[in-house]
Image (tube, rainbow, N blue to C red; front, side, top):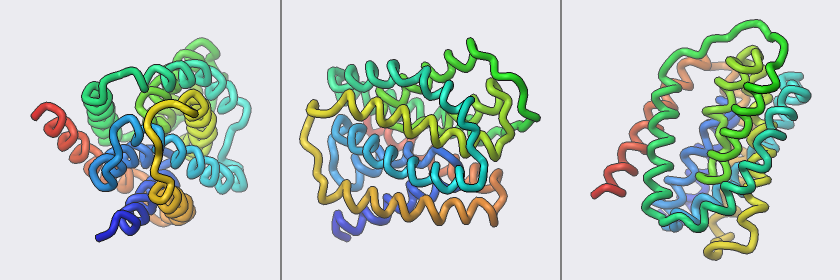
Length: 247
């Protein structure tokens, strides 16, 4: 199977997960770029930011049309992560690739375990500025350093800290992901290894189309079922990466 076809398949899977779950799909982009398409960890995290920014912005549009994006709360949450995302993105290029891969695998494993637990949803309440700012800054740092959108962290934070319902948290997380990913990408512009746009292009295009299908899938299949299936795949990938980097 050619690298081009692999890029299309991987992109479709990432977009499907992102559109259906409001995040998490970007966690699969980095290992797909490394193990399927031969990118170095540094190049993979940068390429992932390009893919995630474009795909999240597309998915955000579809959720916003249905009124599932809380712009005020999401903007505040995202704003808190811009500077941390930029600084972490700039610092990532100076970290040894083995350390970067190990850190990514650990975060992916923790995210998978978190997704296995059922998410609680409660009525919206007043935003707590301090906690929201702290959570937003932490999310931005993870996005910048590891090249992931962080939706697997943003959704539970928007539910637990901001008090959004699950449906609105999913839509609003896409705003946070788009802003943080763009900030981190700007920090990496002109740094690090060159990128293979012949693979990033089709990967991104397939992810964008997959996000539209993912949004439709989320209306037909239980969100809990989708989340558990994705968590299982993510945990397997994380374990594989940990074994690979330790061996």
